[in-house]
Figure 1 (cartoon, one colour):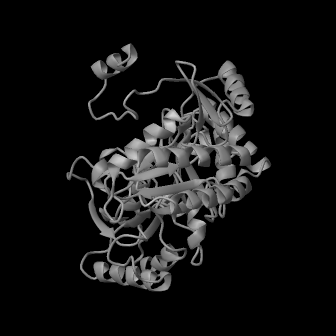
Figure 2 (tube, one colour):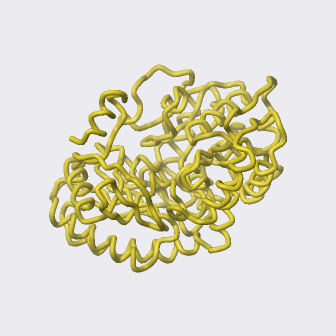
Length: 427
C-alpha cells in the first residue's frame, strides 16, 4: 500500500470506491493517454467515467480555461454571465426541445435533482416512474429513484418510485421476445402499472443505462412509452448525462433513437460537455422550467470558467465531427470486441453503439454474473496498459468501455488487442 493510499483511507469515507488492488494516482494526460505517478503510460478507455469526452489536455479547452481564469473566476448567477448565456443558447438549439430554457448545475446528480424538482412541482405529484437497473446520481432524491441495488444505500425517500420494465434487453421476463413484442410487453406493463396508482409526475430514463452496464432497450421503446405518458400528462425526463453529445455515434442525444413522438419534456446533461470541468444542467420547455414559484440561484452552476471550457469543448466536438468519429471508430471497435467475445465462454454479450460499449461476463456455461472475472479482467487490462471501467446491475459483471470521442483507429485496434489478452489471462 502506498503512502498516498494510506492517507486516502485515513480521511475518506469507507464507501468511497477505488479501482484496483493497488490504486492508481494519475498525474497527467494527453490525447487518449494518461500517466501514473510511477511513469506508466495507459491508453484510457474510460475517460474519468465518460467525462474526458474529447481528449486529455485538449489545447482549445486549456486555453479557454486559462484565459477566463485570468479575467474572472467566479460571479454566481446573480450577475449576467456572457459565457453562460452563449453556452445555454447553443445547448437550447441542439436539444430539440421547442422554446427551451437551460439551467446549469455542477454535476449530473444535481441536474437530475433539479429535473425532479421541476417535474414534481409542475405536476403536483411526488410519484416518479424509473427504469429497473437505472442510475441517476448520489443525492438523496437521485438515490431514491435509482433502480440498481449496488448504488442505492437507503430505502428512505422524498419520492414514491415505481419501476418499469424495459431498460435491460437481454435479462428479465421479456428477454426472449422479439424487439417488437418486447416493446409491446413493456408498454402493457406501463399501462397496467398506471392503472394501479395516481398519475406520476414523470418518467426518468437513461437511453443507454450507464452504471447499469451499457444496457439499452430496442429503439423506439420510449417513443411508445411517450404515447402512454401523454395520455396521462406525465412528463418524460431523458437522462443524457452519459449518452449525450454524440457518444452513441448514431445520434447526438440518446433520446433521438426514440424520437417518433417528439423530444423529451426535460433533458439532463453533464460529464462530457465540460471535458473534466464540473458542468451539469437541465433543458426543459419554458412552461416546465418556469413553473417554480420561489426564487432560486446557483452559486457555482454556470461558473464563467466552466462555461468557457464547455463552449470550447462543444465547438471542438462539432467542428471535428466527433460524433461521426464515434460512429466510425466505435463500429470498428465493437466488431473487434465481438470477435474477442466469440472466442471466450465467459462473455455473455458485447453490446453498445458508438463509443459506449459493454462486455458482460458470466460463469462459463451459465447465465450467472461473474463479478470476480470482471475485477480480474480490469486488473489484467491495467497490467497491459489499458484503463477500462466496470458496472452492471447484476453484481457488477460488465466491462465498460468509453474512450474519448477522438479515439483513432490505431488506438481502437490496440485497445481491443489488450482486452483480448486480458480476457485470456483472467478468465
